[in-house]
Length: 187
Length: 168
Image 1 (cartoon, one colour):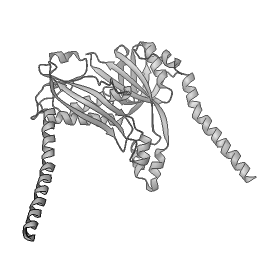
Image 2: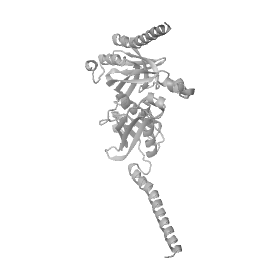
Image 3: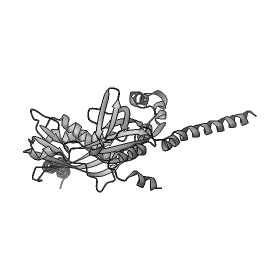
Image 4: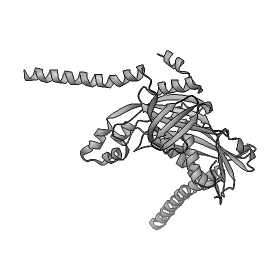
């Protein structure tokens, strides 16, 4: 084997390895995207009413003020999305009459109470975060889709601001996965 | 001699600061006011977030008043009242945020001055059965007194104030 043939073989080997690495690098996000699409609907859904159930925190020690502030912020922020004609609270008797009612169950899966003082003094530590699993079901209790969101406060604001961030994130999920309605009312 | 004077002055200052810090706590424990200075964080209908006002417990309602704004919360609809503790910056609001960009780290230095506060969370149902949560902050030591007044008026709460008092 002369020098020219050897260099050609080496260059083709290098090219093959490069092509293989490139293929692996680009194929991975596609697989992730496919996985994500199973969790959320491919096209925005239509529903006239949404009922938000009380935030559940069975495995996580979530202070009462966080639990209720999260609920109130979800109601406020989802109401602003104008995706539903009616938005019902937990226990609202009128929800039973809604024909295509979607129910949202929020379950807290993680909570870390940081420190506003640490955040303001150091900027990099003291983060407060709340991790919540969202489950959207239809009137028969069948799962429509689910999602995980994290409400957090990292720089400015007191700890309860994480609940506002959580409300915003839930509203973003609703905005993405439900089609807008012409006339939206808040119950 | 000058050193001794300075020591006496510093000792007096520390004693004065300690007594000043303790006095509101003593007052809060001994007297229960008729109305409480509170800050409404979220949850009352027709009241904006972070509104300061007065909370008064009457026979059948908790009334929040702030200037012309008035909101009543029926005692019969209250399902739970819970207290908690938190802290907030002494210099808050817009000025507090602006101090964060103050030169030479002085904003961060001001962040160290914080006051302890109580939180009061009220879980209640509206006339249609819908769940609501109202959150208030109060000066330290006053949430238990307000909770006790609500329970005395007929609000449900867990745990009741007597059980809380029995805790070490």
